[in-house]
Image (cartoon, rainbow, N blue to C red; front, top):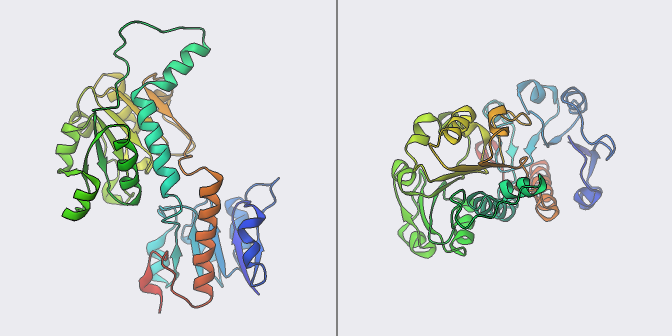
Length: 322
């Protein structure tokens, strides 16, 4: 039987439906994950590989002498050298649909909790500080505020719906503008990138990371936002210059931020850690059991499909499939 290596422990229910067809090499729950070097060794005779929290660089790919497909556990696949994989005809699989609801839910939660300073009040009350003035301008009412969504794909659209439920007005920018019908369906207004920055009371970032988007948000970008605005990122850490964000928060260029992703995970900029007007979560937007089991199924379905000679919808470099 063909062998599939999974770089991190997953529940048995993820692989159960495939065990009659494939042999799985999965670390134990106690071990949790294979190191990069261990994965290089184990991929040597594997036909497929599912990567969780590992780098799928050229060296790893070249270690897979029999490798016919490699998959990432997530929508983004920038941790896999997909250009090199494409060049050698290796299909790359991702999980584009099963993360949508959980990630949008976390984004919406982070928007509301950041604007209302929930984490800051939580820290204060645990420290014995009861902050209950009649007037407190450290937070902002969500209802009636304008949300600027950057990236109006699956997740961006779901965030739109959820925050409209809070009474927010929504404007958006996407490199590929939605049709007039879609804009009418979602009751959204398209604006150019800079106009979204200028008009939004909160920016929610949902763009993919590509080299051209590296540090898309920097000192100059933050200056284009309102000084009363908030910035939320549940997309990719490298889209943001973290030091520039920390400086903007510290100097009142913007009012607050909520972050689920960081430039060099698990490392977080030290200045961000010292600030009260930023809410931080450890890249867990899709971390619900329902979403993670769905992601595992979506990834393994794509791997299995390639190994069976099919053309799965979630192969990102479809040009390599004959």
